[in-house]
Length: 309
Image 1 (cartoon, rainbow, N blue to C red):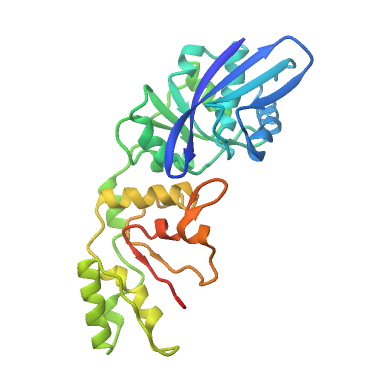
Image 2 (image 1 turned 30 degrees about the horizontal axis):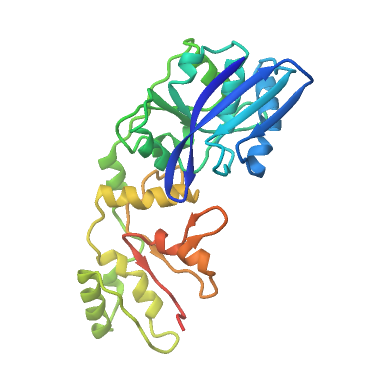
């Protein structure tokens, strides 16, 4: 039997839909994953088997083939665990195929059937508004992150059995709702303040002009003269970050997996200070699997290049 489940993946900073096609056929027991999966995706078969068994379901001992379409783009990460497991249960007849195909699923499975957080939920949620979906099913730790974007209900889940009961109509899940204004208010204060600087009037004047006009600035001086201390406080005199700007930098943090569960939105202007030995890919971005670099992480904030020469 064949089942299809929709998920999402990242290509750089952009999200695109991935159709997880699961086919169970007669033959010797085998579990094959195709569609250019990398290591973590290939290893998912062992996590999925243990999660399904420990959740009280019977794992099919047949020839299983899973295709991640489009097949010409390399897939990475463990976010496909949940849609692959749900696809298997749907292909065996435990879940209705039409209901399974109407939601987007993301999540990493633990061996006991629990669902762990994944990275990149926010950009996938933003892109999924333009796809034909009824909702998003994501780990509970990522629910507030996904709910930052209006347009689709985001359902938080903690276990595979919970997802199966919801898709089978046996359980009702409440979509995640967040208070944007409350989150912005909680993160309004800064750890450092420009008012803490004593003296250095000429440098502070230059920093104020640079911050007001969005200019670059170069500080030259002996060690201990306060260059780093001053640079760390530039972000505190920048204009208050708007929700749109906060959403842009939060997407970058989400892609890199640097978004804490307690703070789904990056509310303050960021300050990035990479080490002077950083590589080109680390600074600008790129790599075999394109990732944002320090320049992207400093978006709408401050990028401080210490020891620049």
